[in-house]
Structures are given as C-alpha cells and as structure tokens.
Length: 95
Image 1 (cartoon, one colour):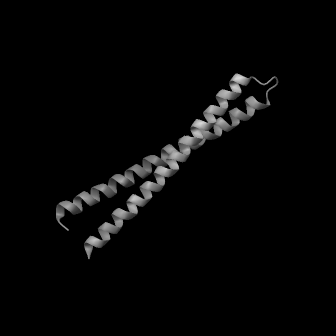
Image 2: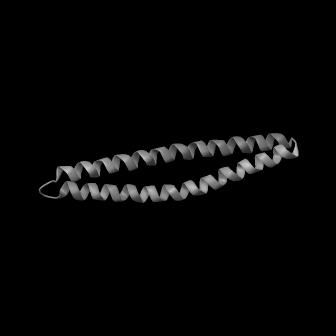
Image 3: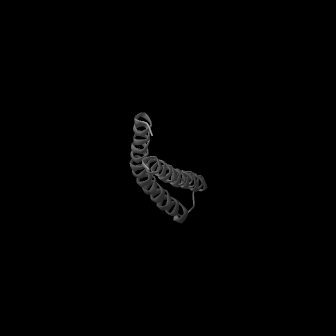
C-alpha cells in the first residue's frame, strides 16, 4: 500500500473515531430528552381533567424523540461496521 493510501486510511479511521465520540454525546442528550418526554407524558396523562391537546403534543414529542433515538442507534451500528472494515483493510495492507 502506498504512503498516500495509508495516510488516507489513517485519516478515515480518525474521522470515524471522532464521529463515534460526538455521536456518544448526542446519544446521551437524546436519552435524557426521551426520559423528559416520558415523564411529561405521564404527568399530562394523570392530570384531571385530561387536556387532550397537551396529551397529543406530549405523545408526539415522545414519538419524535424515540424515533430519533432509534435512528441514532442505527447510525452507531453503521459507524462500528465502517470502523471494523477500515481496520480490516489496514491489517490486510500490512501483510
């Protein structure tokens, strides 16, 4: 493998690692947002009389944040697979 290809591969691995760290921080923020939505939905649903408009807004917030959390999990899986593939290419090029 040429020196340019090795440096490009190393740069790609560094970029993936940087993205994983940034994604971890985002996942923590989204998890706390999801917990806040759950508590808000529970609070609104237990209030008497139930305000239907607030209940629908709380449910939609919960659905939106939980969908985003699932998307983040899928992106995390893709990043891990990309990193493993890049590591395999790096190991194969050294032999």
